[in-house]
Length: 362
Image (cartoon, rainbow, N blue to C red; front, side, top):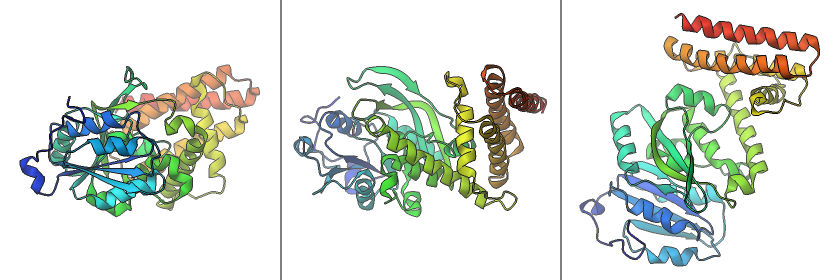
């Protein structure tokens, strides 16, 4: 792999034309991991791209590191003061010229064939606006310790996005016209630490998306990562985005009333789904049971809104009810609830398992 000093500054034949891909990478005080992140882009097997790095007011050695790279595909935009990841990334998006936008965080690594693989997929799947991939998790020293995989198909990803972010931000390639249509990253400062979930939610709910099962990026988890240093703020922003996604789903279905207690119901459903993690939910039984019913209501509304095909709906319903049934039966036997509540949740678990059996006969 080429180093910063050895990467050739010679242009490829495509460099005088509009790049196919614009890679946008914001950075703030990224000196520790920035160099290998940049090198992983410049060493891609697909050469026709531009790399736009936005130095968001760094006070460490970041500017010096950026000055080491002489590759003409690299453009550095400098903010005199720190504006935050959303505003910094939007500046890079405004400068992008490619038909596609590739995203990468300044502490992660793209494998050499990432762009070629994702571009091939998008070129053969015109119905897909955005594609992510599986990832290899690495620690601060670059040592791999786990794999990160998520659902691959559009409907599965749309369902998961109602509750969390199932697409790894650093693995995304998206059509630029789509990024323009959704307006880039939100200017809401409350969403800044979860700007990826907000952006991807607005994309996933409107366009076809996919994840590739192949690992194309190395996602670095380290003590200085935002998900660790601002974990509570990220959790709150994620819950806000999730509730917004669900409310938007209901607003498109006249048969589903939008109640004022959706926050209550969503908290109940989240607590219900946390049961297998080892600790029992602390919320009252009534709220947990209402949360399970809420999940069922969301799913039926989801199928109507997206006109989910019989086979896709059946497969998704089978998977979800199997999970919900296991959670419910665990509560029926493990919780310290009153007898009536335990019988109630047990009956709901039976209903879930009956749905699984019914879907299996289709």
